[in-house]
Amino acid sequence: MARKDSNNQKRSMSAMFRGRAIFKPLNTGRIDERVACVREWVANIFFYTRNGVTIMIDAGYNYARLEEKMKWLEIDPSMIQHILITHQDTDHMGALERDSELLFRDATVYIGEIENRYLTGETRRKVIHGLYKLPMVKMDNRKVLLSDGEVFHIGDIKIECILVPGHTWGHMVYLIDDEYLFTGDTIWFGADGGYSFISTLAEDNKLAVRSLKKLEENIRSRKSRIAVITGHTGWSDDLDFVFAHREEICKPFTRRYTDPDAPYDGYEEEEDTEERARTVPLSKKR
Image (tube, rainbow, N blue to C red):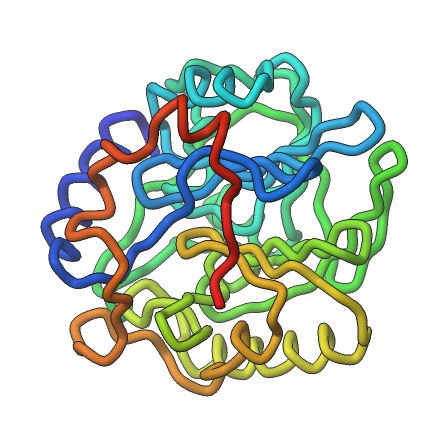
C-alpha cells in the first residue's frame, strides 16, 4: 500500500462515490478533552489522551498532510508511541507504510491476531464482492497481536478488544476507559441512524450484520453512556440512533442509503481548516 496506492484509491473512490451522499467524515477537531480527530479525505484518524499519554486509533491513508493537521491540534507525532488498528485497509494503515513519512516509526502497533494475516500475506483483502484485491500493507513497526475480549492497559488507559468480523475477517473495535467505542468500518451513519457498513467493501456482509448485532448486545448490556465513534461518518452517544438499522447494510448506489448533509464529494477538503479545527467542537449525530 504505497503512496501511489493511496492516491489511486482517492481518485477511484472519489469517482465512484461522487454525488452519492455516502461519506460524511468528521473534520479535524476535538470531540472533547480526550478525543481529537484528523480528517484525511473521507477517513477519520483519532487520538485519545489521558494523563499525559496519547494513543492513536487507526493510521489513515498514506497522506501528505497528516503532520500538518496534527499540529492544528497541538499533537506532535513524536508523542505517539501506541497505535490501535481496527483493520488493515488502505485508509486505516497508510501512515505506517514503508514509503510514508514514517512519522510513527518507533510506535508499537496493536492489531487483532486474525487481521494480522493480511499483513503476513496469509490472507488477501478483497472488496467489490470479492472481485478486487487490495494492495498489501508493508510496514516495519513492532506489533502486538490481540484477541477477542482481551483487556489491557497503556499507562492508565484501559482498552478492551471486541472482534467484529465481516468488513474484514479480523476487524477489531476498541472500547477505551469503558466510555469511548472506536468502531472503524463496522457502522455507517445515515441521516436516520446507523447501518452495517458499506456493502461493496465487505468480505462478508451477512457476517458483518451478525457481528453488529452482537456488538449492540454487548454495548447495551453495560448500561452506561458510551460514545460510539466511526471511521467515516462521525459519532453519537445515542445508542438508539447508533443501532437504529443494524440489520440493514448500507448500499451506496441505492438512494435511500444516503445522508443529505454529506458533501457532494467527500474527498474534497475545503471545509477542513485550521481555524475550524481549533475553534469548532465536533458535534454528534442525532
